[in-house]
Image 1 (cartoon, one colour):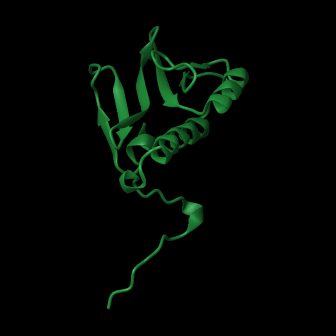
Image 2 (cartoon, helix red, strand yellow):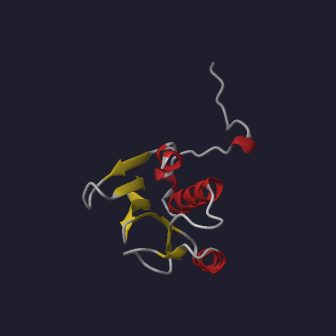
Length: 123
């Protein structure tokens, strides 16, 4: 959850109890971490075609636990579910929510490969 906590303008809350970590940007949920059937799971926002492809490829990626099954996925540890994959899915979920926000509410997210953003000159 370090990836989620490190993104711009992210807040972490526990509105459903201490066993549910909820990560939001601009008040919108993009990730929840909890346990289901005794195993830790992460539930993330995901575009439906990508979610379907992930569920076919990874047996431990399932429709979102207690969420809209079309727009959310849950993932647990399993074959092929690497830290890099989880980090990629967290970033994707965050960007999906940010992209749906009005421009004035969007935090700035800079990728390492895009270089510095615009600057203003004093004077």
